[in-house]
Length: 396
Image 1: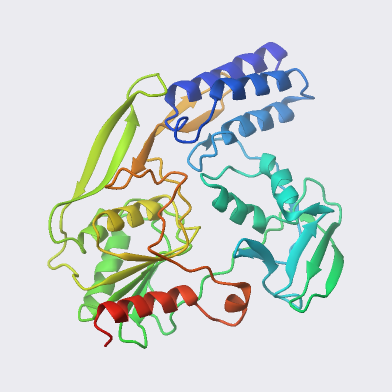
Image 2: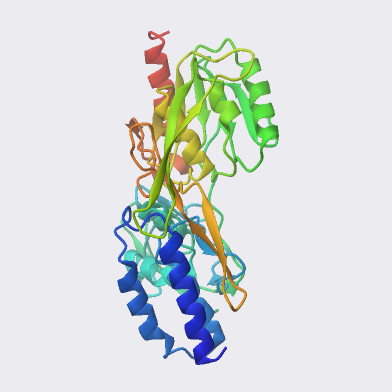
């Protein structure tokens, strides 16, 4: 692309976002100032790859999980394959191998905070900083180059050690799965069984399906119909599609479950307010107490699911504040160079008009598992949810 072409495409992207994006005020974004900063970088670019990366980073300034360049892939980072890391209580720890339980103090000579910030230009943006930290924690040893990684660790008894480890492109550390109840009946999306307390347990791993997920849930709920309470686990569920049929299984009457604000004009404050109601669904409704288990990965349609059940007053929410990415409607634009951009042009709030984007669903009972809980197979979120339902059932 020529310098003129780059300018034209940059202006088209900035203008499309300026006209259609919904959350400037919600996120205190000065879009004009962002545009000026990026315009100053245009003339310093070495080539097209740098230009497209700049466009990726411009969209990332929205800090919006649901806004992205549709047909662009950011450069692949080189990572360390054999030292998996995850965050517990806000700190990164090694989670398997001989160094399991050791805290990560620095990477490549940078503090954890500095390393996470250095990764920001290359990772897709998240709608909340807690969710970004979780994602950046998984990439904590990643780099643009395949040069060796250095990592400083501290053991539980205070010993320090610095490792030098090989990096390679395409390596990726996986997030460890949350502890689940054993002996579950497993389906594609929805797994279920009985907790030793007698409570029912249903885990929904993903909402990335439509009617089949609701069908699986109906089968699970039928098996647990006589349970005195239900543990509904959507931790690590990244979303997919809304599930009104499932929410309706818990409703007695038509209920306000969310409020959406959709752009209806080019101005930053041009919105149409819409209330969302759901009706009872199924042949019968589950009316016993429900504990909803969530964490900072719970997002998108899972954030909507939590919002709807919380708005209906049907659950006690246990765990950590959810991701907070719930934009609702999207708008699309095609740039002269062929790049396509997805732009969030709405946001959703709960029935009390509290936006879920950025803020997330804040649990009624906050529980933050530690790394030793994970390594020893303990699940304090599940344990606290059980105790809350047993108490609600009169201590039986």
